[in-house]
Length: 415
Image (cartoon, rainbow, N blue to C red; front, side, top):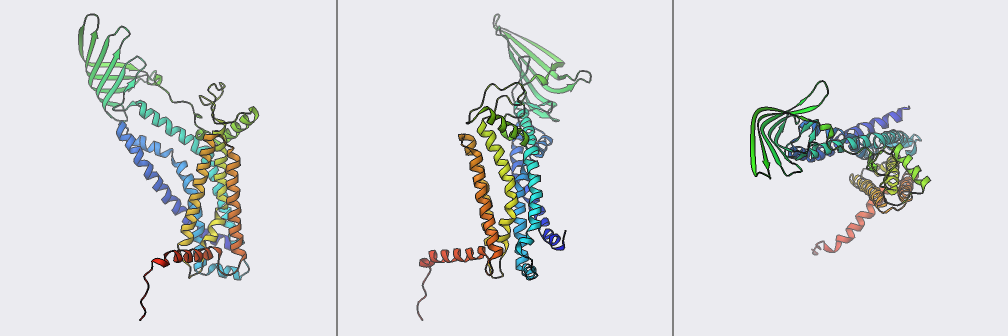
């Protein structure tokens, strides 16, 4: 690697790392507040909350990568241009097309990393998060019981606890209710309970303390009550409602599985946005996903990742400026362009997946327009001498704003 490549990377990489860290922390803190609300409402320990947040790390890193790369390249080229280092490099016969090469190489590495995140790590993390959320809402938490939730046990009882501590294994205010087929109503209450796991067979039992058992018989209209100090109640939490297998949502499929599903849909001529309700027995999901959903998810991931390769060609022209130029126009314009492009991709992916329109044609068409636009802006910047195109755009924008507000300016009275 030549000295100029190392110097450009030294200006880009620290900024990328800092912005990636800041963006990741901001995104995680926003989601952490929502997860804490779920935890407080269902009596979940803090450890479960951080487990849920850990599964979202690939998703948030994938969101922050394009922003970090774009701002890193833009700020690096702005520094080179404002300190006249870029002019010195150009005076040596080295053009901007040569200076941008290490940034494009870094973008290629980050593109591959983003494909790994979005194609393999994020689907597994998203599914693990949904399993934990299902366990919380159904009452089973790490082989424990959450508070304030009505659990339907396999033996016909409905169980609820007022307080749950120790990851759902120390229970207080236990209430159980069951109604038999002949109309008998059985209720059990206990001041305290504890979940115990057998070492031999692994069966979970609920040990209740200060138990009161009441049974009401509709035939005799009588009620029988029994009190005991300790009662061991065998529970098989493994027989409770289980979450579906991975693949019920197209976002839970890996990149290879999406490609295989897309090829299978093409071979079988399956199109549209309707799902098959009777999948083959070897399918992961409980139903075959709509062909439009699989296609839009596949093309969306590929387009989003490949777009990172052209971000340096968009960021560099927006960062090149003279000393007299505004230092915020290129930055604000670049962020607006990047956010708009991402939102257009997200909307197109969601719209084609819901309506059954050809997602490949729409998404790749947007990508081609983005590629042509960034390439044209980059070529126009390093081939033209004088004022950069972005700075000319800034001057035109300033003139336009000046003409708009000119009628509202206070006119000076002649002396």
